[in-house]
Image (cartoon, rainbow, N blue to C red; front, side, top):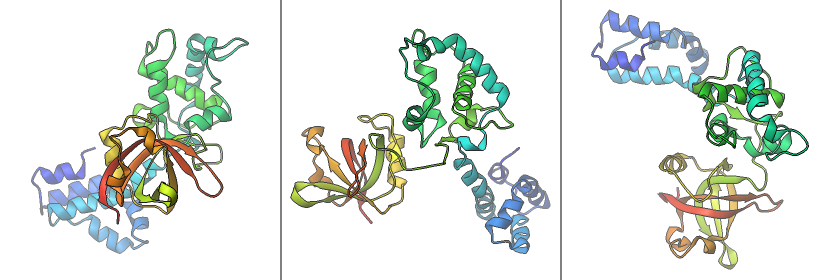
Length: 294
């Protein structure tokens, strides 16, 4: 289906043909826009059929697509991310390629079911788990299987952990937008999780440093390396209400000087330590992502 903004960029503006094109591309989302606009169907019908300028049409397209994007971002494994047929194929591949290391009396690999496995991977999208198994497993010949077989294996792991099946197979484009959560839904990350969090760097008592105005930490897979994409996301992440005490900053080396970033927005990576009165982060990486804190 052609994108509405692709139609606009091709040069049609006020013609009836342009209006008809946008109506055709908006039909799948118009009913959502009515909810988005507090039930005012008259206003929505009027807005969805106008094509007075490229800017108006682009803005309209964004508003119509916004509910769909939010719905995609909130998808979890509790919504039925794989099909029973796909999990059955994955079970056969698991028996042939994985069981020898993960099952039996003398195994090399960790268990792939139960709370320890879920706690290691929850509150993260399926993409990181897929990348891990597709680049490191099986241990004796990592990456030897095809992407579709690794997706089948991932589907089987979800089934083996009692997550519900759905009508569709777990496809490549769904992996990055599907979050792995516990059976009772999304929860804060547990203690000892490797995390990424952004906030305002502030001096504390007794030569300590705190991260203030921080949001709930996000899962991280690499503690000492930061990608440009991570820094960009941290820069754009809105402020929160949490405070974390930052530990081990002296261990980061002489090049890291917290004083130089006091009052600035920074990104911290490290191990999360949950405590009843003051959550802490044993920092492994600290980088500035913004100027003065708001």
